[in-house]
Structure formats: structure tokens, C-alpha cells
Image 1 (cartoon, helix red, strand yellow):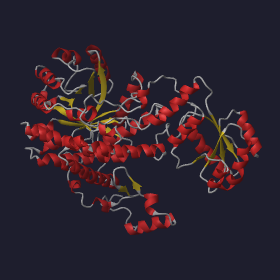
Image 2 (cartoon, rainbow, N blue to C red):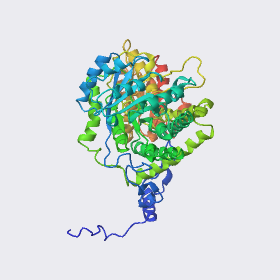
Image 3 (cartoon, rainbow, N blue to C red):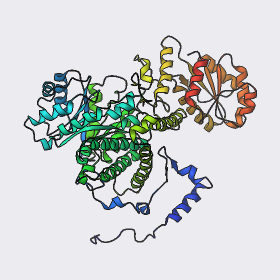
Image 4 (cartoon, helix red, strand yellow):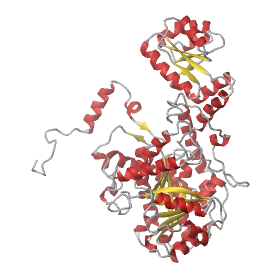
Length: 620
């Protein structure tokens, strides 16, 4: 072991890819390789079951170091540090300042001040809001409900008149008239001119970004990762073009832009998204011939998506946001906001905000994710994903450019149609449980009952379309909403009526009846029905009697395909008003249907539509 140059494993002959493939095909025993092992992604490319050294061939950016153009390996040279951000709603400037000072002592290094109304930001208000906050120690971000709040000018003046080293102040304003256009459908022709004024006013603060691109709007409307990235880059390019045509230098324009991206639950893909984004953005900015390639750095604030968050079993949201925060930090995000687990359905609490902060602090202080520049470097899988996302996002970006740029493509309806198509595909897979939302469409908490009163808007898409809108708008929503509305309907019904009961009539083959009973219990519990499982019955009469004694509204026969031909008709004859369901898709299904047995549940069922149907039958 004293020989440091000694190579390990020299006794083992290298294995070629062909040999691995032969071994895999042998183990598959005739199964189709592509169907069994290849993942067909929403992003438009396939993911193989494994990757090797040879897959790194041809990736030129691997020869660069972290902090070097094209910045795939991160913007930082020696570390992977990021800002831990928490948002504060500003209804009262003094109270917001008090809360900011409190959380800055609890690990937060970035604050997002979310203003409730336009025109509220003045020099005096800013002074109250930022009182005693060290601007050199924490990033400050202003989020206004409009794109003409004057935050940039006011903050720049405040910093310039203060005691701060302007080069050490890091801040941003979320002015995004194009993003507002995608949500509201209207855009003023003077908006870009106002942006230009803001950029010029903010130049006195070196690290002050005043133009925002909100990729999270696409992500929360059901887009794929490739769509979110491509449309964000197209929007960024639109800003570059319009700002430079308005008279700004490319250096000033590029350094003014900050990307606000969502984070999905697709762990490795999200890491690769940020790496691919930096590569593509650097190449886009390069075309404009900046004086310094440092202008081509893509600065990204990542926020956990609302799309996959749920109101039922809400603590599961913590698990979702933890892996999401991990992928954003490993991917090299500039700053990260972890939304508290209850943010989608109620005002956040001290507890939920504390947990959200600590989720990132854990990644820094215990996992040391901030210590290593480009922690994903050299992973065959992530490097391949980075390349694949780069190619697909660039292809879609060019399609947008061919239509005249982002605004023109949006006015034509191209962007909306592309996202709606993807959202519909995702909705279908959620309804069929091919995309899981744990605790909502799969493995729900059987005993959970919603006590809170919600209005219907919680289960609907957010529609901010203004009167006289020029275009169809994006409408952010959550994938869980149809299932939550389904279960909430049952919960509301059960406040005044008996909760529906689904009874598992288990008979015959032990393996099949247990597996199908578990499947059926999960199936009906998704709608908030009470489910009763059983160990098994010796006779049909015994099972039906037990079900009727339990007050079953739905009786689910759980057995093997071979036994259904005899058992199902026998059970059907014993029933009164109960709904009869067979768990599975047996070969004898058509024969059973001919005998009046029409309800079957199985893995290919559209569970959402099926459960709505059972609610209708029960008068819910």
C-alpha cells in the first residue's frame, strides 16, 4: 500500500459494453430490453439503464474548470456555496423588518420581500424595511405584484447613500413584464423602456439584478424540464435583444438578468437542468459579443415547485422539498427557496418556516454540499443527462426563435399549446397512477379526514387573465388537485352522512387475494372511503354476510383470475344494494360482464375517473 501509483483491480479483465449487454439480455430471459429497462422521459429522450466512461466522449465542456466559460461546472471556482432564502410578505414595513432580523439570526442568508401592492416602495419605507440589516452579509430580493414599482431605483439610491461597499451588496428585483404577460395576457409597449431605466439606475450596485425570468411559471403549469428551460432561455434572449436594441450594452443587459426556476421531484434531471442551462445561456450571450465572458454566467434562483405539493398527508411535502433542495444545490443554484410544507393551503407557521430553513441548513452544515465545486462532475449518468437536456432544450429554443422570439411565439399560442399538451400527458399519468403523488393518488393515509374548510379555488388552476387579454395565458396548477377535490368531496359528504365503506371479500389463493386486497384498499382510500380488509373467508356466504354486517357500500372480491369465473357470479347472487367490484382484469371478464358484473379495478384503470363514477353511484 505504500506504492501510491499502484492500480487497483488489475487482476480483473475489463468488461466491454457488448459483454454487459449480453449478460443483461440473458438475465431478462426473453423480456423486451427497451420496455423493461429503458426509461422514456417527458423530456423527449430515453434514459438507458447504465452509462460508462465511453459516454463522456465528445463532451468538450468537461475539459473546463468550475468558474470557467461555459460555466457548466458552476459559476464558483472553489466551492458550491449558495444563498438560503426565505420569503417575507410585506404588509407592514416595521413588522417585516422585525421578522427579517429574526430569521437572519437563524441561518437565512437571503431574504425575499414580497410586497402586497404596487407603489408602496419609497425611500422612507425601504429605510424602515432594511433597518439594521447588513446588506453585505445577506442577499436582498424585492418581489412586486407589478413590473413598475420603482424598487430598483429606490434601493440603488438607498445603498449609494449608505455605509455599504456597493461591490459587496447582492440584490435583485423581480421585474418581468414578459412573465407577467404569460399570466395576465397583456403587456405595455413601454415596459422594456422602463426596464432599461431600472438597469441603468442599478449599475451603481455591482451585483444588483433587476430583470427576472420566471421559468417556474412554466414548471407550475405542467411543463417538462426541457420546456421550462427552453422557454426560459427564449425569454431571456428576448430581454437581451430588446434591451440592447434600446441602447444597453450586452454586458449590462446580461448581468441584469436573473432566472427564477422551479425544482421538480425529478432528482437527477434537475441537477442536469441547471448545468445544461448554464451551458446554453453562455452560448446565447456569447453570440451578442460581450466584452467579458463573465457576463455570460447564468444566475439562477431555484424555488421548490408547487405543482407536486399536496394538502392531504402534507408532511410528505417535506420529503419532496428535501430532495428538490438537494438537486438544486448540487446543480449549482445561486440561491434556493424551500417553500414550507403548508404554503399551498394556509398561512405558513413558525414551525413550517423553521423546518424549511433547516432543510437547507442541514445540506450545508451536516452534508457539506457547499464545499465542493461541481459535486456532480464526472458522473456518467448526470453528464449524459446534461448533454441530452442541452440538445432537446436547444432544439425547442430554436423552434421558438424561428417564430420570431418568445413574445411572438407566445402570441401565436405555440408556447401554451406545447405546455398544455405536456400537462395533459402528465395529468393522464397521474390519473392512472403511472406518476405517483405519495399520500394522494397512491398509498393515502387511510384515517386522515380533512377538518379545514376550503373554497373551491384551492382545487382549481390559478387564472390571472386580465380583461381584454391579447393571448391565452398560462394557468399554474397542482397535479394533485383533481384527487384532492375527489377526497374533499367525500370528507364534506361524510360530515352529515355515513362515510362510504369498501369491504374486501378475500377468498381463495392466498398470494393473489392479499395482493389484490392491498391494491383495492389503496384504490378506494384515495377517495376517502373507509376500507375494511380481511384475512380470508371460507365460503361466499360467510364473506357476504360479514360485508353486510359491516355496512359495506362496496364489496370488492379479491381472489385469483382462475377462481373469479366461479366466485364472482356466486357473490353477485348474494348481494342486495351493494356495489360489486372485482379486483383485477381476469380473462373471464367478458363472460362476467355478460352476467351483469361490470365493475373491475386494476393497474391500468384511470383511478380518478373510476372513483368519480363510484361517488356518483353512491350519491356523493
